[in-house]
Image 1: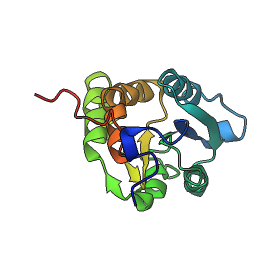
Image 2: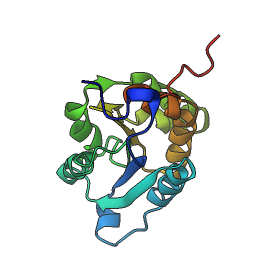
Image 3: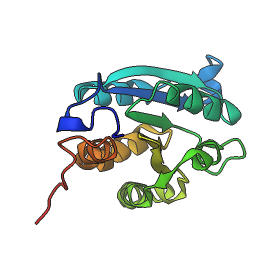
Length: 176
């Protein structure tokens, strides 16, 4: 049996996404969330109905939020924050065990682009990949890191989600 929506290349329903913000201080109301709304707007501009930003504390709450979001089979889940080297930064550890297929090139390019402006961008430990049909990507918690991550994801987003869901539009971008 083929995946829903695969026949004829037609989508099976609305394109959905979730944005999860890993920030203990924002979850406690002590600091503003400066990245989640940017990610939400970026996804909405690309035709996604977006849940969130869902703001949670660093650590296990991130994994809980990702698993909760995955229950509705969204096309994309983007996280921001918790990818650095501070003791509480555990977003990659919460994400990695869920992934069925890893996309290390996305994170390699994010680090490369970020390091051109700020050498500390090399320290992001985020991961990207698929959980079943859902693209999951961890972006850094800084506005610059989010801009870099969205710039990396933008040119390949339609290809990634189209291929994974068996839809037309999943052709290889920039093919020669």
